[in-house]
Length: 528
Image (cartoon, rainbow, N blue to C red; front, side, top):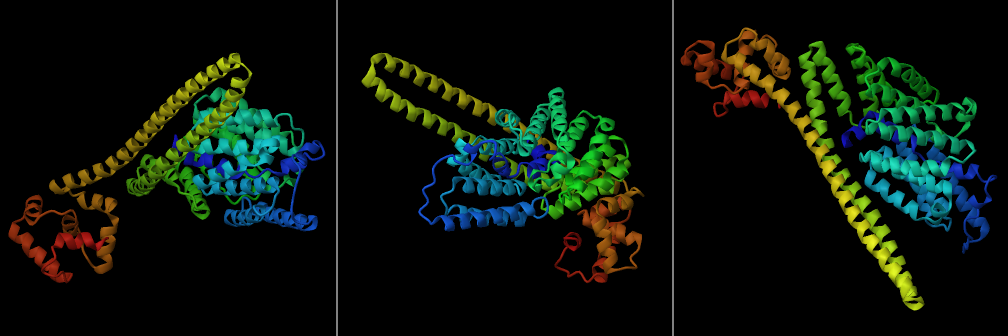
């Protein structure tokens, strides 16, 4: 589900874990000289000047890395500065490196369209095409992108490609990447509700990351720190299966590891504690952690509609319907915004998939034209083989179109489900209003108390204007706020129409309401 990918468990890991791991290539220099000399350099600048520019790029990227997990705006700013310098140089490695850092930061801010443009730029670099590790890094980013737009099948496909590339590496960063890939495969399986496979790969990730000595792990750049999120994901899988007791040890490990790593983005670790207490029946404790989660999300510039809906649910169970309504309203409003953003991101994702497939087809067609020319010259037999290949390409193109149609249908189903959720939330609000109207008509003694629960802002405003106002007058103002006519008020309160008119006149005089303004409208405008 797309919105679920905006929820806590996925975006946290993506925003922190799929960062620029370009030191992987550097760490493997002694193991593989080809990682350094991928193609000859033909710089027009003096060697000393070139080295100086590359040193400046490295310094900026080091600064970008130093703000990772602490200040993403500064991290992105330094990466962009490095990118401007790199694009003036002839070093494909430097360009690819800066594109990766920029894309990684944009993913945290959920600027997916721009992030994907940098992923594409990176994938076009010769250093990425020729260097296995660079290819793995951008493959990881591509998988991250598919995960964020809720395409777990495509995410899984890309992650297995990455796993094949990094599994043979023996250096520290390759080992971290392997553990990271395992946990993302586990995440994709979780989205597919294949919990057996999810646990299998989560356990592989934990085993791989715990093989690395703690001090060696902490000596790596901050951008590689991911152990907290590996524990987090294991706990998340358990919670999806409603197994809070099994999740708890991994929740504790994830939280304490995040403290060791001095991470500023604490939302995932706070929210998963809230989920644990919610599933364990300790709803007050759950609300406490959810409120801390919202504070951290606001600090880091993320929305919190899912956390707000969980708080509303907890208050409903506790019987605090006033607070339930407040958080339902907050959640519903943000849900609608996220729905609109979600539709756009899904469309962009499908367009990018289509563009990738079309590019592959164009490349294949270009190859076919060359082959066809050679075939005509060489022999009619080869021509037959080429024509056969073209038929296969057409078949493949049809299959791709069909796959896109199926994906679009699936996304539309998800959108419909989300709209149903919003409709149900709105229905709950409407039911409270209908209940209040009926209580007014029945002249229920509980009318004023219920009105205060649903519209506390009305009584607050009236008390602000007149601190000595009494309950009967507050009740009368409630009838006006709800839009009842003079005749209706008389009927429901068992008094004469004349008595209500006199009361309105006194009310108008007492609060200086101009004669041309209806009292009902005045009450409505009072709390806008």
